[in-house]
Length: 354
Image 1 (cartoon, rainbow, N blue to C red):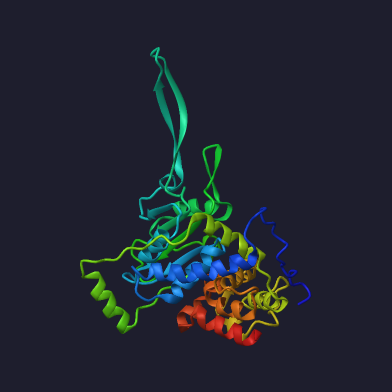
Image 2: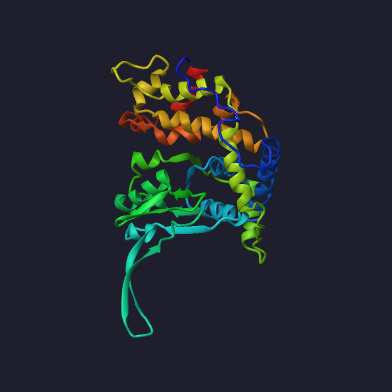
């Protein structure tokens, strides 16, 4: 494609003097991936693919939405990842009565008396639980849209505005949210604008029979297991800084853009996209925007880094199509009536693009 973004190179992002070389960081990244898998395995049985995608989000500085029925260890996965990292961790349990200030924090009037008995009043900001490196937004769909919207600025700009002042969030700052897809009582749908802020939507499936036996054994024994801390905060930041410097092939960028465009049933002139398969025109109301193809390229770079590869290629892009694009599609009522899922459409998109 002639309008594909230029290929990224290792020189695009500057490195501090004396910093480890990218070759060393790539080796360290692959080792960190193995160490984190092993550490999380002390608490969580199986779910290897879910952990892989969580690490992709971590290195890409992206937010991730974990979707699955109750009891599949979604919360435990995020908490275990936080334990394995030398990063501050905050948890927000979303409920219908949760207010935006319960997330971001609020200004309070504080009175202090000096030695002469004079009372001084000043406004002080009390930071909310969002002021941590890693945030677990548990059951995010249980709170009203106004409170959900409190996360929007934080997720996109990594800062929050309370009153007339804007406060920067820690670096890194990432949200891992969980959502129950089957229970509708007392829940609120996530707005498309908020869904688009998530780099990945990760679906957590049932464990295998052997894994479920191990889960039953572990959770009913006295030894629940502990997660060792295996990655320092400096290493996390160094590996995150590496990802933008990972080169990506022109073919991978062309594929990412083509996949994103093929999810759109119509272009700006109202004509059907030439690359969109029939299923897109029939079952999709709105496709992925440019942020979708950007997310595909960034996630592909993170996946390559976790494997210790020096460049991201088309295989990295293909491996991430579903978790990157599925939540960016707005399916039609016809799709719901006929039982057509977003994954079915994306499978046809991949086949049509090649």
